[in-house]
Image (cartoon, rainbow, N blue to C red; front, side, top):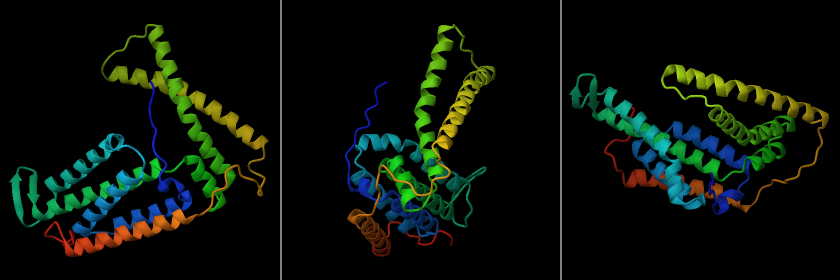
Length: 265
């Protein structure tokens, strides 16, 4: 199967990965403390604009990758809307009780999930894992033993997919009949998981022995193939985020969409 994953290299790709990770963690914590519905709405719009305009990926691909997050938005918002608490009842039927307070709280939680999804997707699409671990070693002083172990683990993921396909083809050639139901699920789980797990353990052991032989755990002063540093794009990234957050605050104050402010009250 030929997967086309071409994309443009925008300025988001040139940001120091450690700085980007640190800023993303701060944003995640900050969004968790936002309880104003209009503010979280505009922050969601800003995060989506950043993702669509500067991730370098076509909108069709971004829409496809966003489907699970849309499902998360609908599920989290609907559960709070349908079964939340409140005093101003809009609709009641059996266990379903929709109130004005539960509706706004549900929308607020849904937007919060969308912000996390947009920022997380932007980070994943614009950050090379190799550069991230090299940056963590050089700027955050992460031990090379752990960094190279994680990079080796990423390299094993495509190999595991190939082994899964090989096992599947072998079962088809040998005429293993595909059954249905719970027994079929247990049979597939046992047939695929045990060979994949044993091969992964064997391969991980060989990698660990190889890393120990090359003194990954003893050499403190080492050279790096990739030199990761800071640039003006890091300043541009921080300034852009600060401008978007300030604009969100101003729009929430001057042009509120929803009639409520703090969803906790």
